[in-house]
Image (tube, rainbow over all chains, first blue to last red; front, side, top):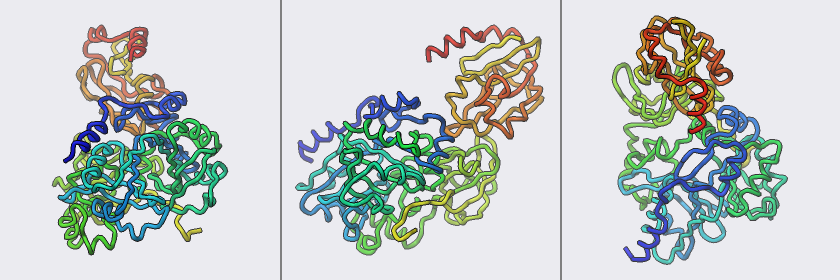
Amino acid sequence: MSDTYEIDRIKEREPAGPLALALDHWHRERGGRMVEFAGYWMPVQFEGIIAEHLWTRSSAGFFDVSHMGQIHVSGAGIEAALEAVLPIDLSTLPLGGVRYSLLLNEAGGILDDLMVSRWGQGFYLVVNGATKWDDLAVLRESLPDGITLNHLEDRALFALQGPKAFDALEPLVSGDYPLSALTFMRGGQFRLGGVEAWISRTGYTGEDGFEISVPAESAAQIADLVCAQPQVKPVGLGARDSLRLEAGLPLYGHDMNEALDPVSADLAFGINKRRRSEGGFPGADVILPLIASGAATRRVGLVIEGRMAAREGAKVLSGDAEVGTVTSGGFSPSLERPIAMAYVPAALAAPGTPLSIDMRGRRLAAQVVPMPFVPHRYHRKGAA
Amino acid sequence: MTRYYTKDHEWIAVEGNEATVGITDYAQGQLGDITFVELPEAGADVGIGDSASVVDSVKAASDVYAPVSGKVTVVNAALEDEPELVNTDPEGEGWLWKMTLADPAELAGLMDEAAYQAFVAEL
């Protein structure tokens, strides 16, 4: 380990107290209730979680996700270098393509999940806020000399999600091609309100929508511009969590972590086909046999009888036997009932399996259901 | 009728030996959208500071503590279908339970409205 690496690592160590995002003042001015999350002050809600949630499902919600890590990697041999770190097949990722991937350890545990986009030069990665400092350390350690890694700390990241996200955003952008050229999991370079922006048709709510990376210095200007559209309201972290839960999307640190493998987590799709046959990524020796044999436990969706929500950490029972743990749970505003994700033995993972949850001494009846709980409405290529 | 408040943001309105208990407007605002209220059983004895009820919001579940000890006489059945009453009218229609007091002297340990408002202003 070189001295330079040590210096980089010290410089990039997670700060001691919560930091202010570029939009901190903007959120507070709009009545955002600020909480500490992933090392930042972030708005948990504006007018109320249920209202913001339903607004996103019916119109368009604007989310500030600038806490997430934006990283650019480039240099000679970047494809091979990145494939040595991630189980991704970059040969099938076109220019502007976006793909879900996983940062794994040698034991096959999940260090983080991330999005990888192919830019003209190199690749653009978006990683979780709470894990970004560790991710940067892993990447710096793993990527060879000659690869340049830039932590794009001078950029803000927003998400605009919902069935009217396109209608709201389209009049505001210009570029070499129209915004409609983007289908689900495709991105491109645009100008948004005159500001240079990377926009991808991606998100974390199950809805059609976009993620928008802009220079942090223009963050408030862009937020004002987008939120001035009649379809758009700002939405906080609370609804972001309930939306992603309904969409069946796992959250790092809750539904997956270093002790869990991607097969149990139902994220094996993050290990691309060619990499399954070739291996050569961290944890391949553990994960490839698991893909072949199936995992002993599985992440499943549960619907719960009654109105009391099951929360993270609650025990799952089959009969009187403890068989698993809830990793995310809450009230679904769209379904108006509590839903949860849990890990259970594979034999109890089939939809329809009756289970129960011990919630503060109360026994809640639950049933395994397929996820997503609320259907995805992505704008896929070839779809109408 | 005299209304008292706790540092855990319950209110208790007392008339003679009878009282009505709920959570304050400040508390409902902090909890956000309330989706479920678990109420005590009518007839249950509660001790001062016991968790007597649970208020579930979209974000989290929160205990509601008995401000004083006594016996639960009636619970607010309307909350079963409309838990959001606790959001819209926390100190009125959104009451949680009624109780008889075991020891009215315990009320001396609670805040009056002015003291509670001052307490909340400091938070």
